[in-house]
Length: 359
Image: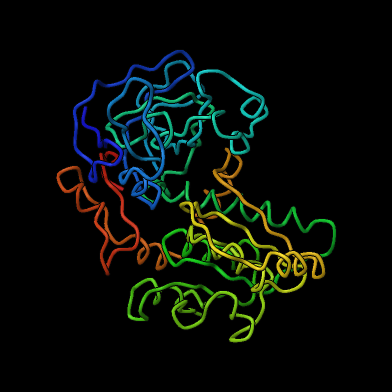
């Protein structure tokens, strides 16, 4: 079968031939339909993130996938059932995090991540997976099933943000998304439907003619150009916000978030920065957090429950939004196009196959 793999740091993925996998007991064989591409894929390709499976010289990419069950192999799944795979797997042994259904809370070295850390991904014509890591998705949503994984990341972030404020009556009216990439845009779209937030802002570094900026404004949010208004100056230029969602990986934003928050606000950090040393006024930030009941938390990955919530959220997103968000779906003959960045690119995917009769 064909797969898209990379030698981390080599700079570009390649189309390779690999044996079709055989499912083990408790696993199903899944025929891959589409796999989305995000910033983590580009970090893996560049060698900045992730590592190879033991004994492998290349990593099969892809962690945002949707497929159809080819062989249930004795599982509770049905042949022809559309499924979305979760990402984390036990590292050759079970542990308490997987046993209680919380693999997203496992520390480093206690998990593999398919297509990222220590395990091959889903960018292949077929893959196998234990049934417990395959989440059923309605046929009418399968075309956009590769968006479930990134949406699930925000489902978890919102869940943890709300939990951190659960000791008092927290009703956020304002929110700021740092980053106008696909994850940031999906999050903006979710804020209205999941949290019913009145006023939203999105910070980026793109000119206002860029399609992502148009999407921000079409969603009813205010675009903030960080070249004109830094994060810490947003309260003066606009207003302090109850919730900040950081999806840039720009380390300074973690500290600037404290200034952007209103009293009782919470900042959720999702970006993974490179090492970077710089000076901050730690005493002032500490004082802000304490005297104004502010909170910062970090979150990564998501579990099955977040995937299930993400499927429900996907069903609520307006068609015009997903049409504009997904700027390209490429078949295997054009797979290199899916990895290109350009002024007209927002979210792309590789299509390995389509259901009988098409999507």
